Amino acid sequence: MKSVLISGASIAGPALAYWLGRYGFRPTVVELAPALREGGQAVDFRGETHLSVLERMGVLADLRRVQTGGSPMSFVDERGRPLLRLPAEFAGGDVEVTRGDLARILYERSLPYAEYVFGDSVTRLTETGDGVRVDFRHGAPRTFDLVIGADGLHSNVRRLAFGPEEEYVRHLGYYAATWVLPDYLGLGRGSVGHNMPGRLASVGGHHRDQGRAGAFFVFAAPRLDYDRHDTEQHKALIIEAFEGLGWEVPRLLATLRSAPDLYFDSISRADVPAWSTGRIGLVGDAACGATIGGMGTGTAVVAAYVLAGELARAGGDHRAAFARYERLTRGYAEGCQKGGDRTGMFLAPGTALGLRLRNGLLSRRPIMNLMIKEGRKVSSTIALPGYRDLETPVAGPGGAGRRAEGAT
Image (cartoon, rainbow, N blue to C red; front, side, top):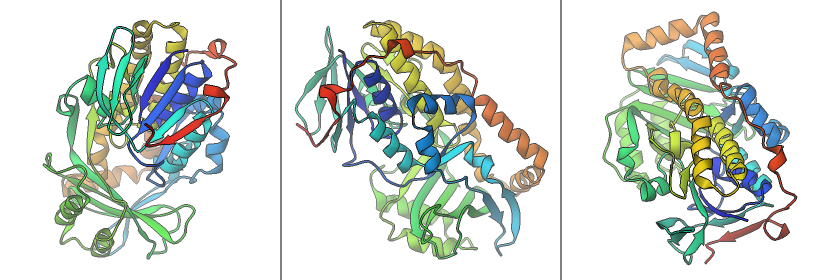
């Protein structure tokens, strides 16, 4: 029974752990955060392929029970007058849930098969003849048969095993930020936003908690030099970018100053020439990610399904499994990823003319319907292999799931 270390407990990591456990592997998932991350922006699944994988995992019904119902988007001028309204299905796909709900459901589904170690991270990877020695920030070194980076666009595993992030991640000219605030506008479902060239300030209601809302800001900028872990520096960059704007921007920025849970990152994409090296592989955004708009969530669960299945089918030959996994999924992932290239320009066009063109085109329902249809088509351009015959009756390591925090 092969042991596999998975770095990252967001989406791709638990999905991969679940499938590996079904095929008799012993997965361990290490996550830097001290616990599962709650809340977060809405993520969606669309098209036959996404829904088929979720159905095979047995989580589709669970996700439907917590779905947001989609998030309609409105754009207004400085005085709050409507300019454009996009229906829930435009951004929400067939099933939309919060990232936190999705992570929790995948974690719970994988727990009978996997060991989870929270509050730790990988510091060194050393490949030997028959495994990979892994050094951790807190825990004692351990050796695994395989290591998989499922740790996002800023993958730690990719940096350690493949090289510096700058070699693989390309900035697409925009930054995005989200944070939670009181719903002082009484928004309910959906979001409302205001544009100036190169900037979007929006706020949306929480689908379950009527007293909460979420701010979502996007602004155009060249690559900025900042500390990814310095929240106060992030807040200063956002305030500088939006200072002087009207509408609700001053009140939203006032809530930012005390926001405890700010997310701030560049809109970027990852392009990795090969998704594996030796016994170390990548899945999800670590391999082929886009910050927003690249269908990364759906691609992650599809890629995790294929990677686990090919590892099981290869009967111990990880080289053959990694090669077939990449051959089956790379074209599909890159096709979905392309949508992320246009996200910043769509949300915050750089010129007044660009804003007028976006609003005018999307006010035409046939054009909007065509874009929705195209999204479903792109998300279903892979023929899913079947791996049911490879499943084992093993219930999981020791017959039950394990969870450790800061394990040594």
